[in-house]
Length: 303
Image 1 (cartoon, one colour):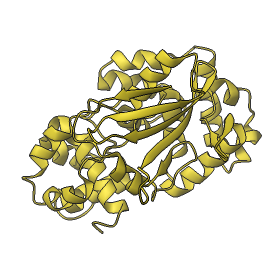
Image 2 (cartoon, rainbow, N blue to C red):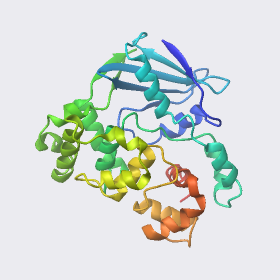
Image 3 (cartoon, rainbow, N blue to C red):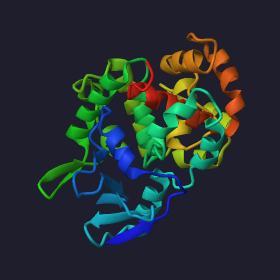
């Protein structure tokens, strides 16, 4: 099965693959940079209503995304297409952000290296919730390593063309675990409790994550922070990377405070309150400005 998706221009999958393949990855997203005559690819194994579907995504010369699937005739094609359309954030307004950023002394010189780059959203809000919990108060590479152990042990897998692909574990599968099961992946006892509590609430339906899609930012934050293990940082992280909201960012993140303060503010790390004040001028593009700051820092385009 093959179908096309049309991202809002600009979007450069080749550049995304080159950049994101250098980042710590947990084993779900597979970025393959272009080589010789072979195009760049994004690959991922999805669980769609209990069906495993592998996606292989390339970009055509006319900017369309070409999606091939394995199996070639998935039963849940409509749901899968909706999921991957959401994940690629096709309507993200990069052009409007670039128009504004080109006039900014900091962003203007780095846009050349990052033009057409945008992050993927998570396929499900459950996955984003687990990501937010695992990344609290520890370094990103350490969190990714712990999460990769969880995925390797508990994610369903298939082998295709000699390579093993793993899907993110379902809430139902993790809900059946005990604290010590998760501690075996190096999670602290407290984080293991948070992940289990969250997974069980999703699995038994006592918390409806999907209902958050139609709520305002503050409503989402209130709902999420009622759960164990979710503070404002986690809620804002889910708003941006899970729900694709571009008018918000995780202001309590220490790295964000340092980068915003150093490059968009007074030249030094600022508080969360000061960070939000500085970013007000970016209005609906706050998430994009912060993402490009983080991307430039990780790629060492800035210090």
